[in-house]
Image 1 (cartoon, rainbow, N blue to C red):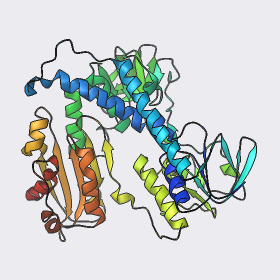
Image 2 (cartoon, rainbow, N blue to C red):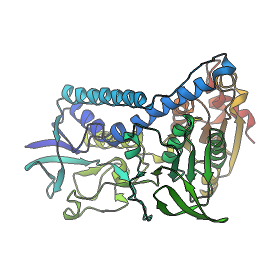
Image 3 (cartoon, rainbow, N blue to C red):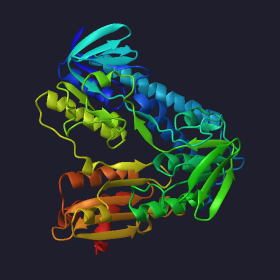
Length: 447
């Protein structure tokens, strides 16, 4: 069958693109080999954040005496938390299916293979399209560690399917995924050790923000071993080496959280003359590949590795197909770490700005100077930090750690997108008392 637009992969790039294209009147095909929603909905963002919320609720109740909340016999029912997680995923998948039906997107379940001439083979049938969007996502990376195939080793997908708590969890990798799972398990009383090869956790974050996050997670019971290389995984332990020598840590479950890799295999890409390798499919800022009519968005491009980035890339592709000139702006892409406390960032760090040759001013204040934050998070540290261009006072970056940060960062993103300067931000009215006021107050500390 012939289509105006075909999409391979129904994750946050694929289903958004399919809906937007179909709403614009394009005859659209969406192919997915597993479940609607892709990794984000079924193996990543949604299930992990649902379980994180369950763990945070338990932790807050357990430490609620400062608020006058006294709970006797408090317990955490992990299987029930998993049941709630599954209900959330089912409901969201039903919602996506409803959208596809509403906009008359044809959905086919099966393994897709691209053929020359913008043709797609699925389940023994061949379909054609004027334009094809490749958004097959990514999979957990598997480093060459002896013992990594052992029974007690899981990746970020496997750990979400476990319905029982381990006695002790070892996490290989102190990036975003590792820290989120460390927070979740430690919050419900599981001893957690994180082994990280770099000198700080979440090395892409502002260094002050990363340090606050590490200190807060340590307070929740997470043990971090930085500058540490994993040598092997044994039946009930992990052997490592660092500047102090060799050692081992015991645990009955090992989570390997060392990043992700683009899904570029078994798609027929080698026969298309497509510019790609193991790092992803090369695209320009409009999402176009070097093959006319073939586009790519999301993790498969090896850029950003964020669900909302994937959705935005998909929007850019469809906008350009429909005659609206649009392009990606990765320098203004917000990112969140859904730990407790949360981390939310957008724009440049001080070091990144200076590496670009910019002269900058920096402002930073603790979250606890904010009345709402102090009332709701009396035992949790936090920080808000801004980076300004020194001469123009234009906002270059916002970096926050503390409760509600994930819900505030869109405001900072809008400020960056519109290139607001300090005096213009000062004229914005923030409701009181809200934690968002911290984004206005921090400018008083700019030096």
